[in-house]
Length: 359
Image 1: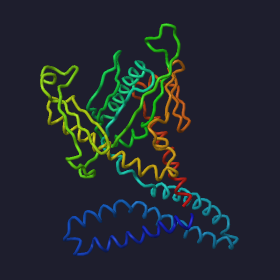
Image 2 (image 1 turned 45 degrees about the vertical axis):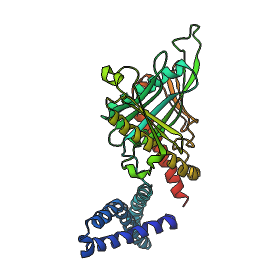
Image 3 (image 1 turned 90 degrees about the vertical axis):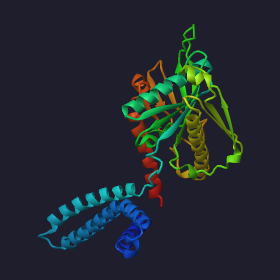
Image 4 (image 1 turned 30 degrees about the vertical axis):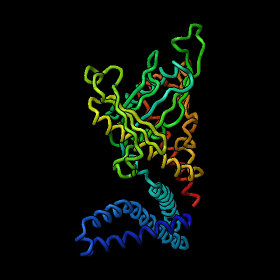
């Protein structure tokens, strides 16, 4: 184990002892906020410290066995013990490295999904609809709820743009790698000569902010317009000015919501999307500064980067970030994304472990 890694673990071991003393003190016991904060920190680092102590004990046991190598009668048994302990030490070191990987605090959050048609005209809009169905089917498999925020229909079907919310434990953690440009290769329904066309859609996945005050918005920076919703939705939604458009003037960010029946609900939903977008911009600025240490998380973070190709004639899906090709496109388009999601998460974790190993 590298000295730098051992030092980090020793510091955590010392921190646990300090936390236990503070939690037992009368001062903290009478301050529930401090007690909860320290208890949470203790529970977060305790598993790592437990592993580290097992690691140190295993090293001590191996040294004891190595001392027995000089005894001819004990040598064979000592060598066997050393092999077993060394194997255990290797496993513990890997587990310790994994336990030190920073956990994304947004992983358990709900999210906003934004799909926009790109190059390809009507075919791109149709593919946006296919992607929407793919993600909603995946959400159904995970028992998550999907809530439509807004949409703009394509002329021949699908969507020019659609925004929806996914609600469920671990939603953002499972879908955060979907941001980027998705390319489709297939024969469009409008193609009379059977030629394969290439179209693209842009996907953005934004974690929902749990606390609105994470982003401070000056009301003077907002322009809020109401208008009559268009499209299907019944008499009420079409006869009242229930749709809401919010423009954040400093950034030029515009959010519309028109699928709710009430102006109040649409405004609240639009504000949630606006906060998520502004927060995502802040995250992207921070992400760009750390880009050298992150290769897999949404590529470079550039929304225009091609991340995946769906080739219908060959029945394959290729994720270009991890060079993964799966020949089960029908299943994937029906929401069977777990194998892909696991592969992306594993590669991301491997990159984090490699970065940790360089410390």
